[in-house]
Figure (tube, rainbow, N blue to C red):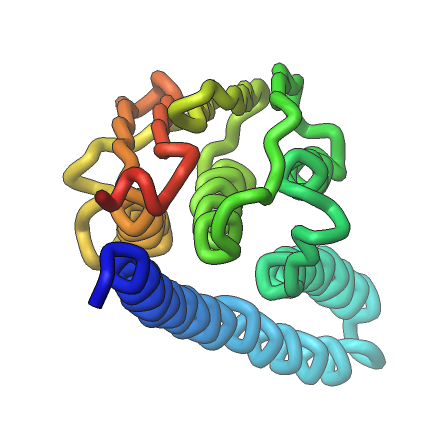
Length: 235
């Protein structure tokens, strides 16, 4: 077998292994989302059904109490709708061939700030998807998880997102001024909703490095560096 055949065989093996790891990572993400829907949205809806039943009992005897209960249901359902909308966005298939990484990142940031809750500092180089599909999907998922964590948990008012591409690597910096957390809290299985495991797995899959710095009340900084050529990085 000549050198070219060896290279092709190695690249094929690499693609297969990356595909398996990507499927495993996405399956882990799907299980987490299903768990979140079951533990939050579905339980909330069941609770609101009971509140509506309670309001129906009050409606003739205490109309003011009934209105108060129904107002609470209305506000609660709005929050559930927003949570489900976030989940749907997270599951929506990406069309990198049409959008490219830069437009996909911009779309994520628009979703993050749909309610104009944040002051944004955004700088994105004209990054493309010329590399392996696994590379683009995994990098996107890593950034998606970071930004969704900000939206769900940080209570931030300022968000910085810088994505630069050099000849050797992608350099991604994400900062927020939110409530922060301790690393012990984030690594606790009870707080697995932070999604740090998924983020770390994605970065490792791309042969990159990640540094997360956070303290309660001091916000969070995530510094990610990913080799721009996955195949070269693996050799």
